[in-house]
Image (tube, rainbow, N blue to C red; front, side):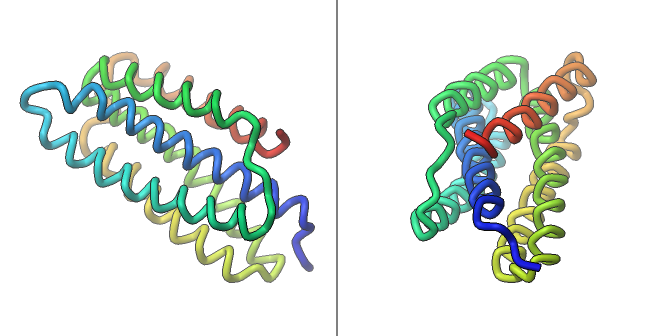
Length: 177
């Protein structure tokens, strides 16, 4: 079985959008925490995760260009929404910032997992391996966030559910437009 070109394009477009949004979230969180005293620990964590997300985004930029795949037209909105989500969760505190990471990465872990399975079944082993590597890095972000007390964030169940729902919606939209 081979993967249809339009399906591969959808995968690349949505993953590019997701990494674009993740970079924006971390930029927003860093804009808040870098201005606060005593936040060196979380700033270091966020910078490290942001650098990995930027590496993922750069990889998808190259894949889009190589395959002549257009990015989602929603990129400006995802950038603004991601930044606002980052700022908003950071203003709620470190636990809320970690809850944001945990919620986003929970959705992304599953999303990448589904893609890896589909790509592997289609014989797209090289792309499947890249996605699996990215998935592992996203899982590490989720685990760090959980270990830093994400579940202790104010209104955690609601905050997590809203962020996860927003991520799933953004995935569906970005696949198509």
